[in-house]
Image (cartoon, rainbow, N blue to C red):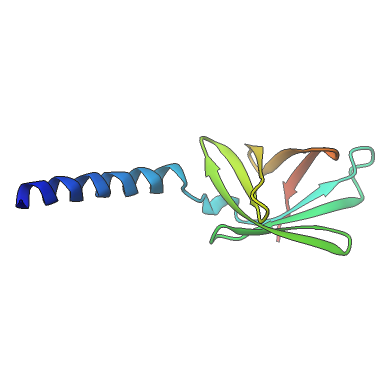
Amino acid sequence: MVRASSSLFMKVLIFFFLLTVSCEKESGLAGKYASANDMTQKTTVANLELMADGRGAWSIEEDSVSFNWEVRKGKIWLHTKSGGVIVGTITGDTLTVNLPGMGVHRFNKVKE
């Protein structure tokens, strides 16, 4: 009986370890990002904020949407409250996401 529960404990421990590693937040990504108009690169179109605890917010003018985020296999995954997922690429301090109906947005990290 002790051996069976020990084996189960090890399996559960390995599962949680793998889950933690595969869904790890990268604190280096936390911060504020801005997307500029692709034509002029001067006018801010959208803002993105990634918090270290995995929460985030996307704001455009007066509208804001909250989401959760994580990094998987070198890509950023934005999980919307409605259950959708937007996957973007990470290149240094730039996040690139392709939004259905809105096109590609490149968010550059804002130096504070």
